Image 1 (cartoon, rainbow, N blue to C red):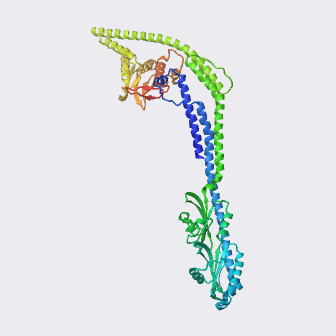
Image 2: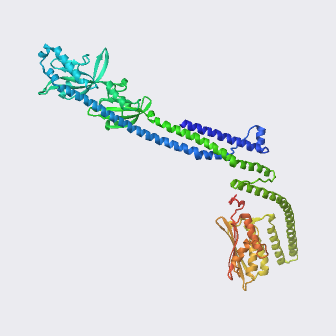
Image 3: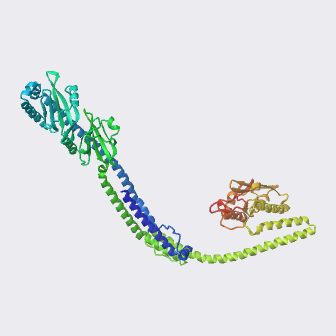
Length: 635
């Protein structure tokens, strides 16, 4: 499944890559006059720019919306199903092993029951109780009778392959006819157990081949005298019949079953190659010695198996079952197939959605793209509007934009003409102040020559006022120059209002070199004199404070004049009507907002008969820095 998903994503990547480069070449060829096109034409190479069309984005969106959720849900379902199926197989296999264990215990108990029937049979016991001399007189006849009786009794139990009887009076019987008599070790064990049965693995020579059998062995005692042992009985298990129990009880034909004793010797299995060998250690874990039954995973013969085990009582044997994990998860192939089909169908749906959307919505957008090329060439066309959806609204907006651009283009020519006229007027406007400044400078020196020093000082102050106003044509100056301009203005005003007003100027040292809009303070001081102080019956006072507050530069012009209606003066600042009243302060406010933005400018605080405070806020700009109001940063 992972390989299939990989190829789906690879195919999707090829589609995307082709779409990106295809659209880029289209974009490049649409603009053959571009520098990049010329570079490509000159060198034969170009930098590929990844152009993402709406069609391409829609393909990604639909893929993410449909295919990816199916892959995620399918993967989660596959993982969960794997766990559920595996857990079901674990407990199902453990249940099978327990059932087989129960069947094996019943078989072993039936063999033990058969041995009890044999040792309790009166005729067989009578033969064994005969004296050796009596047996020797007609030994063959007694052996045949005992053998016939023994064969008849074991015939009723299909899991007994053969029986061997060794009497201490000379009667020795082996139903196989191959003299597989009991060895001394087993005989000693049987005598010590005094009638109790035990299980043993016996090895026999059969035509120079070694064969092994699992046998039940017990002694036969005289019921009248328990201490008197009459003989030893041995019953061999039929391995094929026992293995048949495994094959009939399992639903998985590749399952392997092993029964091993407490010495880890395999005594029964449906795999004859490992029979009577030691059980492989890689199959055994500590759990198998602790718990009566359970399951775990093992790796054996380069394969992964599910091993289930159960203890066979009371022999302390263990039955284990091995089932390949791969076969347990065969049912997951169906889920994998469903996921594959779902991914394929979803991918086809994605393509169909893209095709439908492209024809329904993107074709009109492509038409707009073509018309935009006409507008780039100043050919202002319109498009017929059909429908009432967003595309139709876009067409309407396009038509409005085309018409508006046509109007604006016509206006541009008029604006350029007016701009040339304005430049000529501005140039002429600079000639008059320069002429006036030079003339005043001449008058100043003439007054000094004639010893009119007071007149000379006034003329010099007025001359400097004009010079600072010109500022070499720049709209910006420093706080230091602005204060110098204000001092010249105050010097001139004191000649007229010396007994009317006092001026106090306080400037923080760190702001003196700051960059500010020129001619801001003087109009506000002039406004305070004429509209606030001049109407007072007593002498007035004007405080000028220039300071820094965080990233802002603040001017405060505070007078103790008659005051003014605060709402009225603030309304003048935002009024669109041009009147002579308030023109100076509105000009100040508009110039600050023009250069720095609407968050800066002029504001007033005033109370009737108390005074007025004019507050100017500009950005704090150090000398050499520039201010960009679009990104609100200093460069």
